[in-house]
Each structure stands twice: as structure tokens, then as C-alpha cells.
Length: 209
Image (cartoon, rainbow, N blue to C red; front, side, top):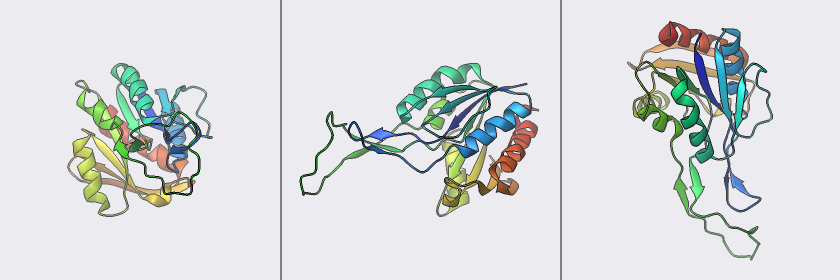
């Protein structure tokens, strides 16, 4: 049995007290992966952004909102885990400053300066200890395999799961599972619950043993 950390869902980066940047991630894949890990007998910790999906009762869920909060929670949990499956889609940018009051309409254009948020998986990858493993997810719209492999290397992942924008907020998807050598270990399509079970099987074979 392994202790597995799973990140899931989107994050939110607030512009003012009521408006925020985010993306369409639903958390469905994270929920499916968590259920598949539990079914395989693993201990599961989920760090989740705001979602409306349910996670298995056997999993311990840590709820966060922002990318910074997700990184902080993962930084606390990951050292005691055997591996990470990073299904979350953290918001990559945040406003340089958050307005303390709701931004009012003025009739004029509103310019917002955005800066990058921390890369959660890359930060964990830099600090992983011997024996720990990381599985990343890459959602790409062009040069998909090349971009996924660049992410795999930069984030110190052991495997990466490649999908496209059609996976966002969908019940089904198509994915490729790739290793560090660029080999495609599996091409899978179907309901996310079915994909999750197969992905966890591959992780079991390749990384857990």
C-alpha cells in the first residue's frame, strides 16, 4: 500500500472580493483517480480547489482556494507521501494586487497586470526525496507531446498524462500516458472513471511495484 497525494480541481486568484481568475476544471478526474487509488488499497490525501464533485469517504480531503494555498498544503503533505498524482489545474496567473473593495464600473477600459503563480508540481519535484515519484497531467492545445515531455522534465515527473481541452468539465476524455523516455505507455479513451482505473494500474506497475 502506498500513501498517495492527489491534487484536484481548479484554483481561484481573486481580482477583488467577488471576482476571480480561474479555469473550467471540474475535479472529475481527480475524484476518479482518488476512487481508483482507494479501490487499489492505497491511502489517499486529496488537496482540492473549489469543486462540486465528491471524493471517496476513505480519502482525507484538504480544501484550498488559491494556487499559493495549494502549494502550501502540498508542501505540508507531500514529505510523508510515497507519490503525487497531480490532476489539478492551478491558475497560472494572478493579479499583481487584489483590490480591497469591489471594482466599480467607470466606463473606461480596466487594465490588470498579471504575474505568474508558483508551479506546484515543479516545486514539489525539486524537493522530492529518493524513492518518491510524481505523475503530472498536461493539457495542451498544440505540439502536445513535445510540450508534455518538456513539462515532464522541468517538473521532475516520472510519468505524465497528456490530454486536450476537450477534457475540461467532461465526463469522458482521451489521454496518453508517457514515461521519461518519451514512450507512450498507453492511449486511453472513455469515461474518466475507466481512464482513472487504468492510469492507476500503470502507476502501480511502473512506480509502486
